[in-house]
Length: 229
Image (cartoon, rainbow, N blue to C red; front, side, top):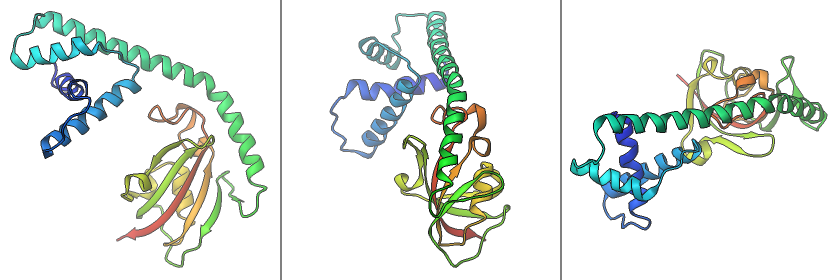
């Protein structure tokens, strides 16, 4: 059994064994947090396990008393990985089928949005609105910037937010999606903009990370906190 699979089994076991644990030590709290995180990842992968068998297997592995041989363990882990790949492929196929619809919805939205007060459209098709004007310098494409942002799909679903995490993001401006590279260069330090980014300036027909469907137009609220020297 690989180390990564052992880690997954150990982490998820924490959530199965203790529905209401006493998290009275740093180790218990961190172990529980890892367990929840990995269990959530398994749910997103549409992987189903039998909780009782899982707990029994974890305890047997911990005690060195597995009723399955190493070859049998390897076969079952391979079967689980096959299920995960199959579930992921089905998700990707379903998302790809929606790509034309997403692209058309994005075009319609942007056509209507650019007529709204305060919205500006650039030659590339990027749209923006100034929410708060800043008076500092503007970055160039090779600068490192520090920003707070919230990214949403057109239906309002938040797929990423440094604000929620409570920690600004720092990155080199020409190493992100084209819509960001272009848009943030329009901003003065201290300003806050709303961006609407067509799919071809975002993640295109492939989408990203299972959270951004193919050909999605995206909305970002961005605050430029600093240009890092």
